[in-house]
Length: 121
Image (cartoon, rainbow, N blue to C red; front, top):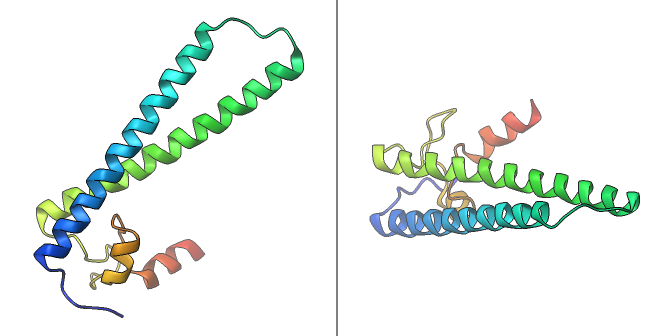
């Protein structure tokens, strides 16, 4: 396990990565909302096959927005942990999260071992 402490440069880079991803997620959610509103204002579909396809597309878009909301929540929590000095500590075991994992998943809440255990449950 890579237990090297997080340097200020690492922390700044990870914070920037989290902020950029958060901005991208917010933009995606705004675009999805605008598209939904434009579509709803567009009128009614007369063909049942078209209507079924539109419902399916709407369900997929809703799932994507929920996924984005979840990721945005994780990002905001990671930024909060940065602020209170607990960023990089596993929420399960308290050990440091490896830099390799943080670089890949800057919002990671757990070390790889604990995350694998949670996913097995």
